[in-house]
Image (cartoon, rainbow, N blue to C red; front, side, top):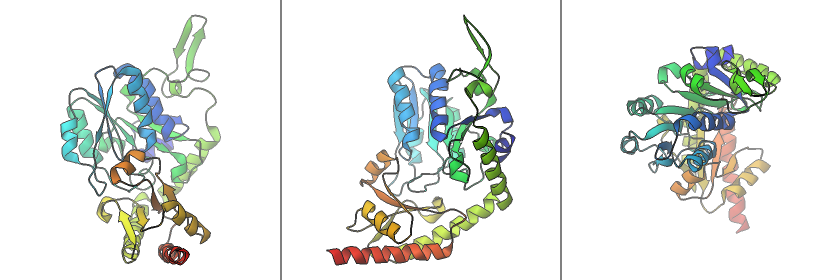
Length: 338
C-alpha cells in the first residue's frame, strides 16, 4: 500500500484501496459514492473515449437512480471536443469519469484542465488510469483528481489486483460496498460497524500474493524510471508511424504523435481486422483486433473493428520493422487469394 501511494503520489497509504482490477474499482465508486451522491435529475459526464468498464457501471447507476449520462464528443482524430465539455458541465453534474489515455487510439486527455473545470461546478472526477499509470508519471495531488483506478496486470504485475485511490474525505463518507470479513470493526445481531480506511472497502481475504507481486512490479518500474519508459515508447510510436504511413493501403487512426500514448491503431484497406490479426499471429506478431471494449467510440469512428499495436518498454525498433514487414506479407497473401 505504501508502494502504491508513493507511485501515484497519494497523501496517505490509507487512501489506497485494493480491488480485483480497474473495473472493480470503478464499480466500487459507482455503487458506494453513487449511492450517496446521485439521484434523479443529476448528471454523470463521460467521454466517447471510454472503455466499457467506465461506461456500464454508470449506466447501471443511472438506471437505479434516474440520473442522466452525457458524453463529451470526440473529433475525427480521437481528441476530445473540449469546447463541448464546457457546455455539458453544469450545476447538475455530480461526477466526471474519464480515461487518461484512450485504450483504442492512445489519445491523451488534458486531465488537469478537465479537473479544474469539473471542480468549478462542484463535480468530482474519477480518472481511469489503466492505460496511463504504466506509461507516464501519475501524480494524483498535482492533477487534482478525486478518484483514480488502475490494474496491476497492465504494469507487469499479476492479474487479479487493482487499485482505487480516493481522497480521504471522500472515502470516509462512502458506505462499504461489499460486506463480510475484514471490513468490520464489530458485528452484533442488530447490525455492524464498519472498519477504518481502507479496510471497510476490502471485504474478505485480501489479495496477499497479488499485492506482493504488484509491489515488486512498481519497484521494478521505479528503477527503470517512468520518464525513461515514456521516452522509449515515444520513439517506437514515431518509428511505427513512419513505417506504416509509408505503406500503401494502411490507414492509421487517432491523433498525431504528440497527442498520443504508445498505441498505433490502424486498418488495412479491404481486409477485415480479425483476418489481419490472424495472419499477423501466424507470423509471430501480436496485435489486437475488435472493438477493444469501446463500442461507442467505434460507432463514432464509423467502423466495427480496428487493429491495435501496443508498445511497452520491452519492445524494440526491430519489432516495429517486423510489424511493418508482416503487414506487407499479409496484404500480399490476401491479394493472391482474391
